[in-house]
Image 1 (tube, rainbow, N blue to C red):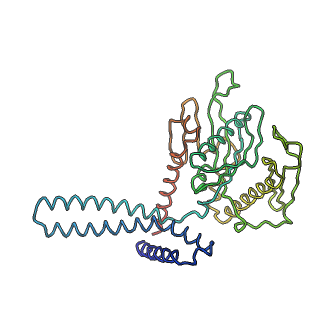
Image 2 (image 1 turned 135 degrees about the vertical axis):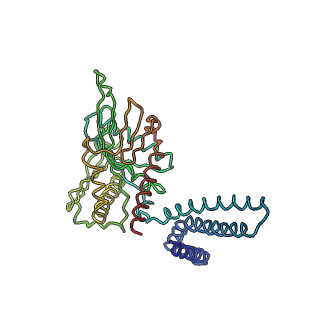
Image 3 (image 1 turned 60 degrees about the vertical axis):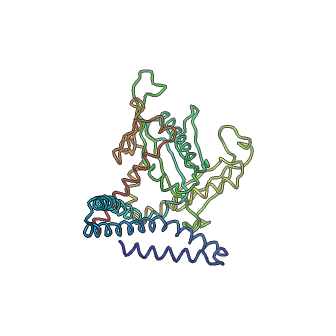
Length: 358
């Protein structure tokens, strides 16, 4: 591990020297690549430098204990020795985590699909609430949200909703939301006061760029039509809605949220690229793909990653065994604690696998 860290330290010095070259800003692709590499390496090298300083301090303290006869000085040396030993252990763990292979999609924007599953209208109402929860969370992260597609029902629910989130590290956090979310509560329409269980599915996909996925024009059928739904000046007056059909996969995308046909077309292609890229990722990572399928499923009650129990005011994430009694805050977008716990559990599993391989 430490040979690799020394190589990374040397590489960071090389990058810093390259960034000082007068012509580096003329090549924007090279400049962006160097800046990204610098940002990735800086926290690793800083932790490594601190690690080396602590190791040197331990040696100095041991040397002082051998040579020093003054009791007060010896006590100071012992205290410093213990502090630095503790810090070295912490830094070793930090460095192991920093050196874990990065998900290449972590810095990408995301496309999120929420679909009502088992539970009828109650599931559609819960889908709308989860959509609002993610809107609030995105706002807290200063991310931008754009609606792509939405099928509403009259009572304020959503059968399905698709939206894009643009922002730094969006996929690195939102990817843990993929799966079946279950709600337990008494519906407003329930006169007997019985608790009902409903489910929705959430699928989080990294946004794919043209370099990630190539779409052949002959594989696509594009239909334009008048938008349908509630309100809006252009609804039912212009052919602004776009439907894409991808023949090889059978994927159909519908976009009507913008007034402009061109904007709807761009959004539809962005969603199609994300879906095709997601399929490619599944093929490349079979084991990971199987886990993902089992999470997303079909909306059946038997597959769940998280339960929102309204009578008890609790949310339980079943993957990591975390239960929080702050349902109201979570439904208002305060999901960072859950995401942090999922990240920590993911890192712990990767570290365990790495230790087994060593």
